Amino acid sequence: MTIETEQEADGRWLAEVLEIAGALSYGATRAQAIASAQALALRALAERLEQGEEVPDLAGVFSIAA
Image (tube, rainbow, N blue to C red; front, side, top):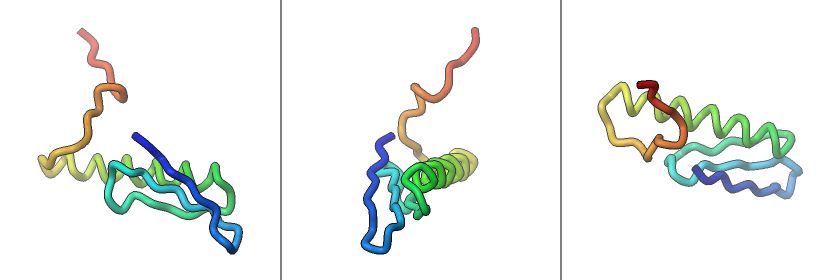
């Protein structure tokens, strides 16, 4: 998934996971904003999977043992 970052005028960082609507987060550092956005995206994906909703392709995230 693609994460875009931007530094705000007040110095905070904003990170957004483009494939997950609403998965954006602020942080004091770029790394904090990215980590927070990743965690938020994972929670959103888990919720969607549990509800039987469509999610982006997760082929690169998991491998299934034979």
